[in-house]
Length: 124
Image (cartoon, rainbow, N blue to C red; front, side, top):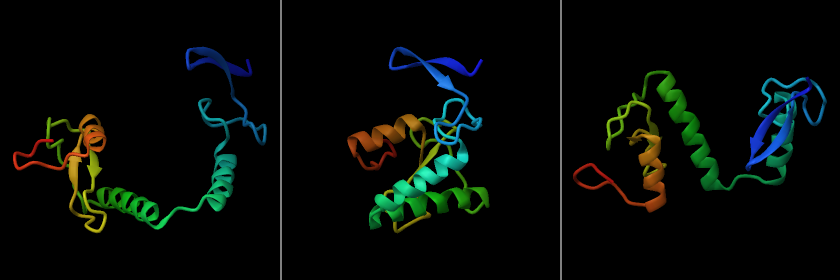
């Protein structure tokens, strides 16, 4: 079989195992393009839509944070609200890369949605 049935927006869609551009077999059926074509597409898209200075700084900080965690220079702590072990790094100030709040996905999203800063009790 050349494809797999899946659900998208409540409608059955046929997912192809082949890349839409080069027609070679993809690594993941959930992707539209193979890795090579996806990289080429993003390179072309990024050339037409360059990042502004703020977005570039955020991207660099995200990469640096991942590398610091990987190299043991930054150690993730449990969520400061609920104590979950699976956490995301939140930077209040992008100029201070080591000042990180560790929040679970739920509390990180809530923080961005409400825009509430850390209180003296440590909660949202």
